[in-house]
Image (cartoon, rainbow, N blue to C red; front, side, top):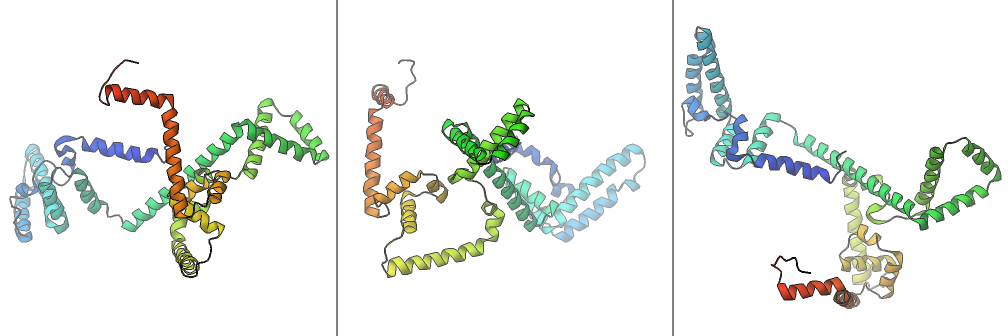
Length: 341
């Protein structure tokens, strides 16, 4: 199954294949093909619609298949008549003629010709395209979120720490009801090893799902996360943001009230330039440490950031691999290939 990450790559591959076709040969299927529409009708680009129509009628009478006798002559005349009719269809319409002139002036603009040609041919309502596009994005978005959530649950199920804790909870639940435990024992006796393992994993998964508070990009998806619902709720979201902004200005800028916990966390996240999803993925103990250090205050955050950068530089300086890399750069420079150790 094609995942959301593979779709852009697939589209890029298709477009890349089209772009590699030299001299615009793939455009030969458009308009008059390899022939020039003006030359087929015996007119120039400056000719008026009346002159083009007059030339077409004259050539149509000349090459009409019914006016020729013999199978070979009729076949030649029919082929010429088709080309003339195609050329007239292109040049009689102002929009089509403009697109054709653009192709003559810009033969290298492959994608633009492709779009201009099929935009008129298909006659698809732009609103329908928008609806279908949003629907596809919403479906991919929802499926990919469920896949990430399932990956997170399976990861926690594989960790002994969480798996053992889940087993303890299951054991406590079973010991809480003797009658249900006895019936479960009889039922398990009738099951095969594969069925028992499947049921065992199902119980562990259920306990982890009910007790684990997974945040960030791997959180359990909600229907409100998909694009369609977000667009539907956009007026409400904008109104809520304006209300929040007005409240913020009134309380903290004008009335100079102290920040609450929610406002402090918002300012810390803003200073760190993290999204809400990224900030939610940070451990709770780390977040509490941010609050303890009062990182919502800009000066404190700046000092903390400098300390973190210095600590990172110190760790890198003490790292043996980084030391070896610095020696290599000092002795050989960045542009040398060598097999020396």
